[in-house]
Amino acid sequence: MTTKRFTGRRAVITGAARGIGLATAARFAEDGGSVAVIDLDLAAAQEAAKAIADEFKTVAVGVACDVTRKDQVEAAIEEVAAKLGGVDILVNNAGITRDNLVHKMSEDDWDMVMGVHLRGAFLCTSAAQRHMVAQKYGKIVNLSSTSALGNRGQLNYSTAKAGLQGFTRSLALELGRFNINVNAVAPGFIDTEMTQQTARRLGHDPEEYRQMRAKNIAIGRVGVPRDVANLIAFLCSDEAGFVNGQIIYASGGPETRR
Image (cartoon, rainbow, N blue to C red):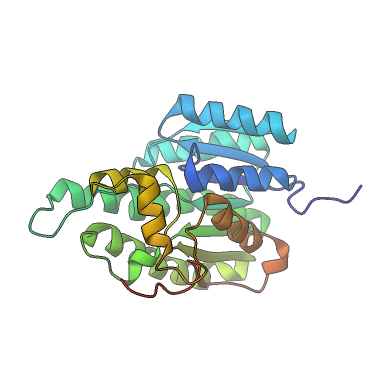
């Protein structure tokens, strides 16, 4: 039997009870890895982990964690390390949106988005890299977005996603000597619960909104979580061992108009 490429690897994915995070956790498990589904919602995390374990016959654990809380992050990473036997891969996927124009955006809207995306990625990375440095091996992928290039009504989200790109490049310089690769994936429009909620907030039917967005994408369709999960899996594989500090856009090509 051919060994799958993540056999023996332990992956931690934040915000993994649904959407891109769930697809990523499943992708690692499909290729032989054991996974930790980290999410704010414990019941959803445990349900997702059980489904993954049952389908792919691997070890999967669901852990509750508010990634903006240092005490919870430290406890979650240590729990995962104890249950899985270590930490080899971290995917900083947890994210929220609080969209609004600048004159309507509250301080709480700004702080919450910055907290989850930037503080959350920092705290999770700080905790996970200790295990990676000690074993001289690790893979970290941060979830940025095409919104990092600027997006009307997403001042907080765009700023946070752009910040994650600088975070990625700096970490790659710091951690590379420990055989730890750090990269970022910047998805375009991906059909998830979050984008469906955005459609409804803008007064669109989600299906009509998908079709409308697809018209502006070069390959003629919107993305699905699996598209992003496949790219993350490649970046976390040993095949990508010389890829470090890169921001890779997964958007189906440049949009023809914005």
